[in-house]
Amino acid sequence: MSTEALEDLIARDSPQFDVPRGMIRRMTGVDRRYIRADGWTASDFAVAASGKALAEAGLGPGDLDLLIFSAVSTDLLEPATAHVVAAGLGAGCPVFDVKNACNSLLNALEIGDSFIRSGAYRRILVCCGETLTYALRTGVSGPREFLDAMVGYTVSDVGAAVVLEASDEPGIIGCSMRAISAEWAAGAVPVPGARAPRQCRQRFDLAGMRRAVHRAVGEGDLSWLVAGTGLRPEDASLCCAHLAADLLADDFCDVFGVPRSRLVTTIASHGNTGSATLPLQLETSLREGRLRRGDVVLLVGLASGIGLGALWLRL
Image (cartoon, rainbow, N blue to C red; front, top):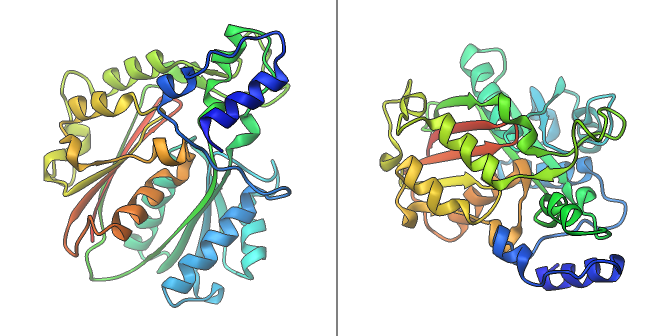
């Protein structure tokens, strides 16, 4: 769905509000987003992506030792959506969910890597399914509601999956995480009834998120990112980054010291794809021939909370 088509829907459903044409693109950089088919759920996306990932790896559901579902979206409050995914695939391994906003899959990769290094499991499927357009509100009463609903105007519905396995070949080098939790309200999508609207409303505070990111990295202090690997952003052949808006790209490069030519973003072409962003960008880069065997890649997640995550891998 193009941004122009979305503006037409908002105008149709908001007769008392004069939609400011072009503002969504100016604020977020999103040209288009992808909308799920009727009836599709988060687990449906995860099952579809997982089936492709297993097929490309030459594996079947019976080859898995563990399945982790990791996404913003979920099918149910109980049981874990991972059970629904496993049933859809026909897998009989242990399962659980990991949830940390848009860093969910990044955290699941960190957990899976740790499990494999410890010897607890040898082959793990990490998957996600995002049905984020549930947050899309086309009916707004005025400018404040329009701005509060902005996060919903950026999002897409998507699935992704990654197979992790024990190997002597290059792979995950290390992972680091950081959080500025005092800024959790800068990006929030409340569960109806869980908090009073005065305490928490759906909102998208881009300026607040930017301030939190600057606080999280300090005054050029990237020691948290380098810890345990000795690698710095400039060592990466390519950097994939989950950004809530395209406007953050230059700011990200300045703060993290990543050349703009090495940064991969998909916000304009695919919108905010939640926890699926980093595997989407990695897959896109591989398909376009931007990566070769032996290249070092840095995956950076910026999530509501505010959370930062960095995962290094060698292809």
